[in-house]
Length: 501
Image 1 (cartoon, helix red, strand yellow):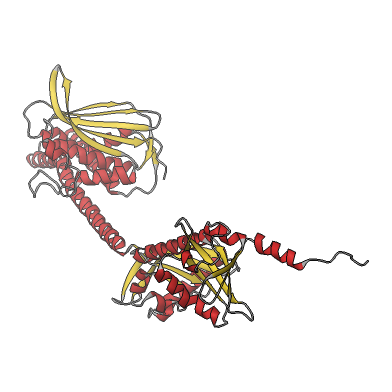
Image 2: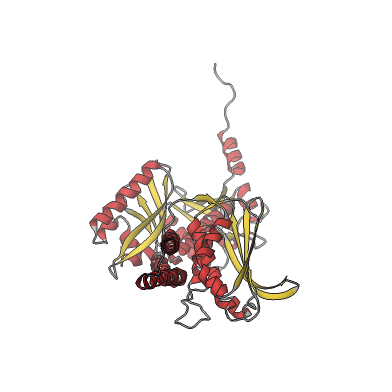
């Protein structure tokens, strides 16, 4: 069907010209404004009749910027070369904004048509991204720990300064290379490659303890690395490696382990020395009795007055004494036997076994033992309890031997739903406050060097804290016995009833 109404193109173009979102500005060769659309004067805050005939310099911050725009854009378009630039311009009220300005020469005329779009928000976002990117790059490079990004072939995609320093290179040079290009140990480099591929295939973050070579010093360095795999938008595999240099910490830990082993060895040697001394005390009386009985029987026999009944009595005494010696040896052998498993035992049994091992020291020093033990059985290492009691009791005996009053050594125990509380105290007068704070320090002793090593109480604390999951502390106390005020030191031990190992 034939349309009787003729389309007026000029009307359509005028509507498009005035209603488009893009500002349109036409200038002559002198950069004077000869035509604008509605969007253009709205962008710059002018009225419709305020721009025609004005020079476009009114849009620029200053004359230098006006001249600069002429150099970078206007001359190019004037030479029939389309041009697009991002430039900061100003409104009538002086407000600044960023605009994308695109220019095109108008055919057959010495005029230029500029299209203008406000890109201030976009520009701000770009500036923020640039700022954030710069900040991130600074943080990555300033951190003292190696940070790298690798692709699936273990090639470096991103490297920070710490990594480059480790490999005696710089971050830009390392891009596209791998560990094998820097470290001489090819097996180690191959391990790094296989390791990152394995983690990327698994798709799970791992914490890996590994070694690397410092290319500059050729020394092994120890690292704890967090390796996080991920894919980019194209599905390519990458892995981010954050490495923490733990070389110094590892070396210190190794040195600490050596020192602890030495302390344990010295502790055992000291304990063995004390046990030999205790054995001598324990054996002195029965050996003396055996010697006296045998010598008496021999003398009676030589005089011809030894009767059969007397001989049997003498042999019986000798037999009982040798049995006592055998039991003593068994007790000491059990003490030195290393605990291999947790057993269920009573605190009182461990205390009694300890007292039996050092009974002669206790008797020779006239020490009165008081027991107030009211606790259930405990699951733990029995021999370690004996060693704990032995160390504490020996310290108390040394202190009690210095006083003239009646001597007491008291053990008390009680329990809650979750723990056993053991208190061991004496009436030796207590410990000076400054010294009290140091008694659990290794090698600290108030005794003469020939009498003590200063590791007994240190090892006691080590056993309680590290092996038994408990705690121990000491304090000076006052208490009453036989209606008389006593002063001494009290060791308090707290332990879980059911130790989980």
